[in-house]
Amino acid sequence: MKTELHASVVELTTDVSETTEQALERLFELRRAAREIAEQNGLVVAAAGSYPTSNPSEQEIAPVERYRDFVEYAGPSARRQGVSGLHVHVGMPDAETCFRVMETILPWLPLVLALSANSPYFEGRETGMLSIRAEVLGLLPRNGAPPAFRDYAEWERFIERMAATGLANDYTSFWWDVRPHPRFGTLEVRSPDQATSIERTGSLVALVHALCAWAIESPARPFDPGERGVYEQNRWAASRFGPHGRLIHPDRAVLHRQAGRQRVPRIGAGVAAAVEEQAGRVAERGRNRPLGGVGPVPIGDRPVILPRMLADDPLEEIEVHSMPGPEEGRVGVAGPGRTSSARRALRLAGIPARS
Image 1 (cartoon, rainbow, N blue to C red):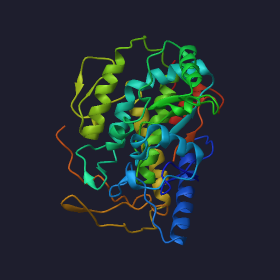
Image 2: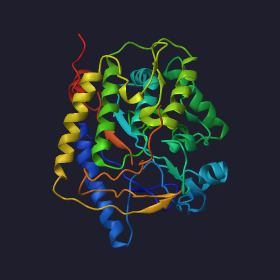
Image 3: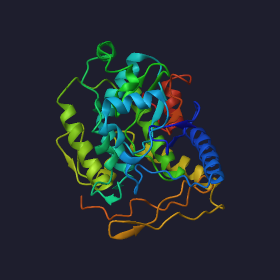
Image 4: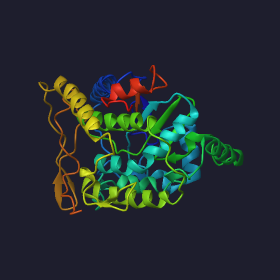
């Protein structure tokens, strides 16, 4: 458990895990421990992409030097970061593979965001966005997709140049939706909203892990800086409409009417099977230990039941985003860098390796 920018937020970080299921089991125990500590202090802990009722600008900043320095630099754009994401680390065998996988999965990350959207309320109001977190992150410097680079060496030179100016300490001062993490030997996917239930968290982790496993076996995408424009459009649509959004297919001039029905090429069935299997196993553990919710709390003109972070019952999912849709901390999972090979990663994800 770690502190975060706001003193009222706690970050949960798992150890390196060999499988998605193992990572979720560890997160299950971390949530349980956080809940028990909170209850001992007369508090309740909840998980969501944003805190619905609080004004984050009025929240106390954690007494950590790097957070104080960040607020001094970024000012109100930092203080407004009352949002929480799910960060998934996937082990990579080397830097070049990590960069190639990053560029291969990047066009699909708006779909991950759309499926994870869990932050429609912010600062005590209904925002009209299903993921206001994505918009709030846009207030930060160095946000969204990383610039288009041809290879890892270009990425590294850019980081070193920015660090030399003093504007950034290192690559962790870049709040991109995805970034290599050289110290951990991982690719860090940062785009999903924080899920309320363990079950949904498991589904998102399995999806990200499977995407990376698919990308390892895929050829590099052609270098096309213009793709960043498609990414920004899809990211906005995912933030506004969540799974009801219309996203441009990354590889074709096709507009999908609902992001929730868009299939990742060649791994759709494998991802679905992996997600369903692992989510079912994790959910079964808490089936007989129900807990209630926290609410109701008024937001706008109607009450909303706040979700409880249900360490004992991942099936008890009282949705924050009960708003009707329009028409339209951090989990480590081993990848090929932490296991025997890329094919092992594919097997862990439940995806047949390509011949």
